[in-house]
Image 1 (cartoon, rainbow, N blue to C red):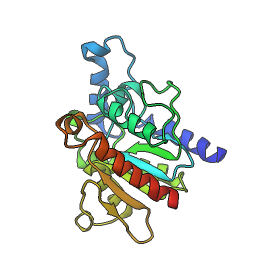
Image 2 (cartoon, rainbow, N blue to C red):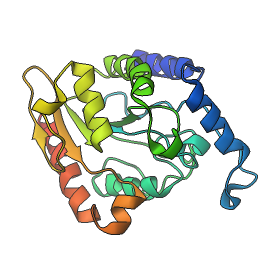
Image 3 (cartoon, rainbow, N blue to C red):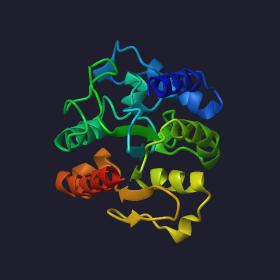
Length: 227
């Protein structure tokens, strides 16, 4: 397992040097150069954001992309913005995270049995990576998952995460439509579970409540523990 952690760390270092998508490079750096007032003076990560978690994870959470002033600032997935403020308390309630608040990549947060990653690794304008940018990022996800041999379940946080997993497997999207709470069982593959994204847009409007997410997360964790 020590070898797996070292390989994941080496992959993260290579990822952080990626400049394959000029539009995303320009945007992530522009956000760092002109932060909102609440983050004035902050040192932004402004690079691709690597995955984070337990190298022995049986459950992998796949999100959309780093937030411009969240992960693009802190350098850790779902950390430093409203999405993380919703996600990490839920992970803590489920026994998957050591603490309910995620503020910085060096805040001491530890994950148990779960790995957090995303379809795109750089903050995109309007939170919408282009298809070609998702295609360019897919090999990073593939390499990362190859270093997580115990994975049994994917939890897709939003349609983009759902589609990223299916495309990685070469599956037809129309054959496995995204739906909150859906459990997709594909022969010879890990189980894929769907959830609405934990974005402020969904959580502030009630489209996704804490109780709704707890149920989906609990089901994904239960399926992962069963192997």
